[in-house]
Structure formats: structure tokens, C-alpha cells
Length: 303
Image (cartoon, rainbow, N blue to C red; front, side):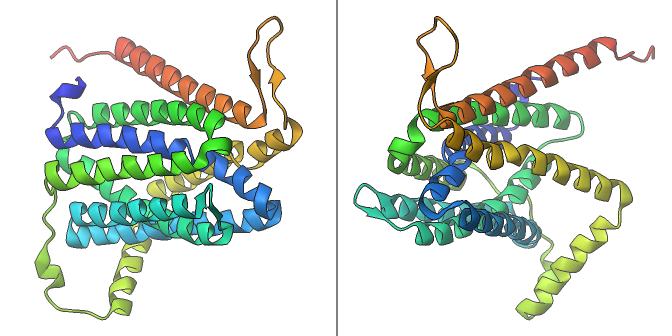
């Protein structure tokens, strides 16, 4: 199974995922250090807890709304908010203006919207794939996402602290490309059952229905265990860009020579980008190796 055998929607979606993930990876890992330099680590910690909570709330909201209204409207609305959000972030963190608290509010809105779009993206891929090619689709998605994080992480490591204004504009440009391609080249992959929603309900009742739906899913013990395990893994991985990132920035504020006899130098922020790139490259290489070994040693049925 190769990339060009996938449906046109999946091909476009994977390319757009690579573009937007690369742009966001050049910014997101370094925001903790950026804000801690201006506001201190304690305030920054509480701020990022709020941002993460907004992302989770957005995921629940986007998942429910994509089943109710379709995938494309949720994606288009969310990416429009993200585009406007990053344009405002660039404006209030330009060479002429710096408003860190307003930037925090903007990032809460942005991450709520990113969280809303994520389940719609995933659902669209499921809609457009089939049991025969779904594993290959998610393998390509996983590799491209990690490659994008690697490229974006290295780019941000050497540019963010001095050129964050341009990188914020770059994320806005990448989101604009994704939004335009989605509007003009991606068709709706899911037609909701409107009979379920033919009666207008109060927002509180509608939200309650969505919450009950998620709780019913979590009653599935295997899925609940998988979700908890994934939460613990992500919480551990995030320490690379949170605590470890701050520690590297504080302990290595000036560029140092990394390897004897080589002229290459790096400070703490540069090392954070290098570590993220190393992490994602190892993930891609190891998963590719395991996939090849699994294919080689899988016993095919005789008939």
C-alpha cells in the first residue's frame, strides 16, 4: 500500500497535516520558555494548564459537533479561528508591541479550536479509509507527523527566540493554506443523520447529550484503559518541552561547543530542538523497523 493509492481526500489531508504540524512545531515547544522569561515559571505553569484544559475541552466539543454537523464545517470553523488567532498573536508580539497576558488568552482560544478540529480530522480519515488500507493510512500519518515535528522543532530551536514574530506569521500562513485547500478541494465525508436533530433543543440539553455520549464510550473497559495509558504517555512526553525545556534554557543560557573539534555550538533552546528532532527520528525509524519485521515474520495463510 502506497501513498498514491489512498483517496484524494486522505492524500490532501496528510499533506496539510504535515504543513500545519511543521509550522506549529516551530512555535509550540518554545512558548513555555518564551512566557517564563516574561512572566516567571509559576504564572507560566498555571497558564499552560489552562491552555491544555482548553485543548481537551475543544476535543470533546469538536468530536460531538462533527458527528452532529459533519466534519468539514467543524474543520473550516476551527481553522478560521486558528488563523485569526495567530494573526493577532503576531500583532501583539511584534517588534513594536508585547502583550503577554493577551497572548495567553489568544492561545487558549487557539488551542480550543485546534482541539475541536483534531477529532474531525481523524473522523474524516476514518470515513475515507477502509479496513484494508486504514493501517497504512495511519502509519503514513504517524510518520509524517513525527517528521514534521522534527523539522519544525529544529527550525524553531534556532529561530524562535529572535524571530518569533515571523514564525507566528508562518503558522498563520500554513493555517491559511490548510483552510483554503479544505474549503476548495476537500469534500464532506460524512452526512449526519439529521432525523436525530430535527427538534431544536436548548444548548444545555444538547451539551448534556454530548457528555452522556462520552461517558457511555468510557464504559468500554479496553478503550478506557487504552485512553488512560495514552494520557500517561503524553504527560511524560510533554516534560521534554515543559520542565526539561525550562531547565535547559536556565542551565545553558549561552551557546557552547557540543562536540570537541567541531565548530557547532548550541544553547539550551537549541538543545531542546535537537532532542525533539532526535526523539521523533528515533520514533519513525523504530516504528518502520518494527513494521518491516512484523511483515517479514507474519505467517501467511496457506489457503
